Length: 305
Image (cartoon, rainbow, N blue to C red; front, side, top):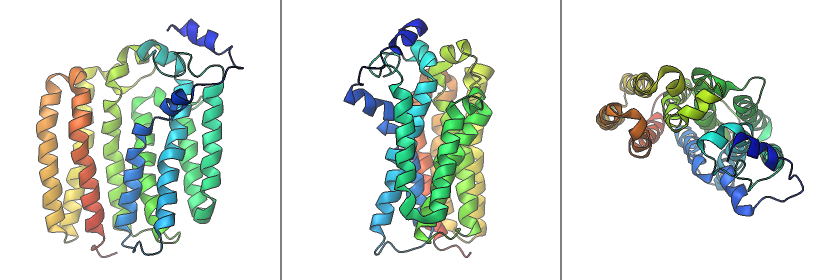
């Protein structure tokens, strides 16, 4: 589908979207990272789950099926012309979500996220509001953080990983901020997630360049962007390992170091043909990164505040 075809489909505002297309718009596959980070926050808080399962489930629902889904819908709406080039089969450029339904769904899901956050109290509501603000600022003008690969990927890493992690700890600590070691580790893994986000940009180089989006692969070229993303993923993990050793969590540090070595081997293969192997590193290498997050979360339970 061409960009002009996208504009034509917007005229069909009276046509209801296909239910399966709505689910595709909300991208369930993307819900896992913030839900995992939220769970890491719950674990790292050191609090017991006894009598708190309902809060845990609510937090998971907010981070994944609500806030993350809202951000995906907003992103698809504001990326509809880019997707017409890169991924014309997506729900909006294909016409399966016609008219302005993409925008309406993004707004509705954002409002549902805020309503669902009410039981979390004032700080919980604030965190969800900040997450939604970043989600819209990432995709929507005039800010449209994604126009710049450095800024856009950083904003996603800080919210999908760091903010979700801190939210999980806040929920378990009844609104109190977690100890500084938890905040430092959450921040470091957020910074590393910048590299993971860059992996997703390799598939969209042509469309990004055509629409003036300066993702790192589009701006730096695939090879240079590949080296940058590997460094950005690895350096925060090295710092986490050093901190855990300094805090007396030697064995978790060793375990994470082992996971980093595996990532290094996979990244070396990726660097040989980054554009062709971006999906390979995303599918095979990133899980070692997220397993390290959970190991660090469990280690933080025994680290002095």
